[in-house]
Structure formats: structure tokens, C-alpha cells
Length: 496
Ligand code: ADP
Image (tube, rainbow, N blue to C red; front, side, top):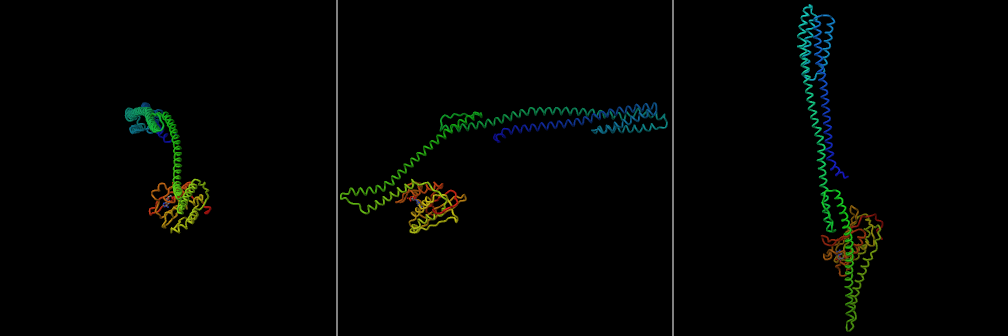
């Protein structure tokens, strides 16, 4: 599955699920934390409650034993008082340790203070000299102290604890309700959110499929122009679109096949037309000199006194026949161009050989030839004979364009991509506009004795070597022919 589509479709539900999971975990953790707090507070409060009750019981016991001792001051009864005191102090200590709130601490402090007062008074009475005084004091003490100073704060502590317990229970109830609401919200929100998200995604997908379907429909309508009866309707159903695409692909194949066959037919027509044009050009080229010769011969035959052909006539006939021969030879060269016999050679050497062949004529016309080429060999894989012919053709054309002297420049360059570029430029009149657009077609010539086959033959040779030739007039006057050859190679030999 495409990653982007997967993220688009699965991303939102995944994110929503993760949010829900996070909310659930946070809720569970929070509830757990609260419960633990409640349990702790509850444990303390219960312990406090117990301690308050125990304190009250032990102070009542103390009071009882003190009363008994006052009635009958025996050692055994005194020991019971001591045991009660010890028990009370232990319970008070425990209660202090488990005290939580300020009120509890205050109540316990009050109990402690009351107890100390009682303890102090009791100790004094127990050590009194006169037993009558002690007895009276003990009765007094029994009536006043324990109840007033210890039992009352004990009741206070009990009340406090009960209130606290009630508060905790209310808080716990409230929390329970909150947790219930949160769970309900999550329980309802999850499916509801999933439903909304699912609906949104399904809608988005359906819209995309619909758009795709519309495009397919549009494509099919365009095809209708070429292939009849392509009927397609837009819909949001992916299977339907799939079938539609299959259908359109079949139609496209049909159109492609039809176009290919049309292209083949066109190519054939073009070839036939080229052959026709060539035949017409050949006929034209041959008919002109033939007509000249025929007219002269007919004139001689028709002459009443049987005028023989004079030397001038023979010259004309000879010239026209030579022209015919050149045309036929050119045609033969053009038609019978052998397959190139490529070997690695230095293009600079080929250029030098071609320059040497035209040097005498250049000197005669006072044309300066300048060759600029790299210092190192420029190796190319070419048929040396054919390329020499190309260069000679170009140089002779340049010389034809420079009857009154001038310059012929040859530039050889190797590009960064190792392609070889050869520019042959002259300072002549430039390419005549009348011929510029058909310069490389056979028989295109502006020269009286030209065949118009030189450039078309050169182009054919260059193209068969995978290169190309272009021509342009130079800004400062003259023509420039540029040959581009594919990548250079190691030069093996420069001469053939
Ligand atoms: P031909 O030389 O027999 O005419 P080409 O195919 O070699 O045939 O040349 C075709 C025509 O291109 C020439 O007749 C001429 O008009 C034009 N041409 C070729 N080279 C040059 C040049 N260097 N400067 C001007 N015109 C040129």
C-alpha cells in the first residue's frame, strides 16, 4: 500500500485511538491515586477513632479505680491505678502519632493537659499525710477532673473523627460519580469519534474516487474523438472505476495501434513522395543538357544546305555531356554510398589532407586557409575516405564563394562531454536566401555548373556516423558549416 495513502487513511483513527488510550490511562492512574489517598486517610481516621474511644474507656477505668482506692486505700488498688495510668499514656501516645488534622492535634493536646493536671493532683493526694484529707481530696478529684478535662476532649476528638469520616465518604462518593461520568464520556466518545472519523475518511476517499472517475470519464470522452462508443459514467465506486480504467486502457491500445499504422502509412507516403521528387529533379537535371544537345543536332539535321556542326557547337555538346556525366556520377555516389568502414583516426590529419587537396586552388584565388585545432590528437571513429570527401566538399564550396580571395577558417574543438565540433567558415557572400531552407536536399544549387549533390551527400555521411551538420550565415559576413560528432576516442592512425 502506498505510504501516503496509508497515513491518510489510518493516521486519524490511529491518532484518535492513541488519544483515547492516553485519556483512559490518565483516568485510571488518577482514580488509583485518589483511592490510595482515601484509603490512607481512612486508615488514620479509624485509628484515631479507636484511640479516642480507648482513651475514654481507660480514663473511666482510672476514675473507677481511683474511686475504689478512695474507699479502700490498699496497695492492690493503687497498682490498678498505676496500670490504668500506663495504659492511658500509651493510648494517648498512639493517638498523637496517628493525628492528622489540626483539630485532632488540638483535642489530643487538651486531653494531655487535662490528664497531666489530673495526674499531678492525684499524685499529691496519694502522698497526703492524713488519710482523711486524702480521702476527701480523692472524692473531689473523682467528681471533677477526669470528666471535665479528659473525657470532654475525648468526646471532641471522637466528633472530629466522625466528621472527618463523613467528609471522606462524601468525597469518595463524589469522586466515584466523576469517574463514572468520565468513563461514560470515554465509552460514548470512543465509538462516536470513530464513527465520525470513519465517515470523514470514507467521504474523502469517495470524493477522490469520484474525481478519478471524472478524469477517466474526461479521458474517455477525448478518446471518443478517435474511437467511437466509449461510454463511461462518473461514480464513487472504486470497483467501477477499476472497470472503467480497464475499458479505457483497451481503447487507448486500439488508438495507439491505429496511430502506429497511420504513422507507417505516412512514412511510406513520404518515402514515395521523396522518390517522386528525386525522380522529378533527376529528370529536370538530365533534360536541360539533353535539350541543349538535341536542339543543336536537330538544327544541323534540318538545315537545307546540310550545315555541319561547328567547333563551337561541339564545345556546347561536350560541356552539356560533361554536365550530364557529373550529375549521373553524383547520383551514383549518392545512391551507392557504401556502408562506412569506421576506424579510429585523428580528425586533424583528415583535415590537413583535405586542405592539401585544395591548397593549389586556394593559393590561386588568394584565399588564406587557417586551421585551429587542439595540440593533442582528436580521435574519432569514422570512415576516413568518406570524411575526407565531406571536408573537400565543404572547402570547395567555400572557395566557390570566395572568387576574389578571402579567408577559410577551420576550427576543431572538443567539448566537456568529449563531443567533437568542427566549424568550417569563410568570408564569402554567405548562403543565398533562396536556397537556405533546402540547402541539404539533392539538386539544390545556385551554381551554373553545380549538381547540388555535395551538401546532401555530406549530410548523409555525417548522419550515418551519428553526427549532424548545420549551416548558418556569420554575423560579419560569410557562411559557417558546423559538424558535430559523438564522443571522441583514442586516435590510432591519422592517415589512410
Ligand atoms: P553545388 O556545390 O553543386 O551547388 P552543394 O550541395 O555543394 O552543391 O551546394 C549547394 C548550394 O549551397 C550551393 O549551390 C550554394 O548556393 C550553397 N553553398 C554551399 N556552400 C556555400 C558557402 N560556403 N557559401 C555560400 N553558399 C554556399
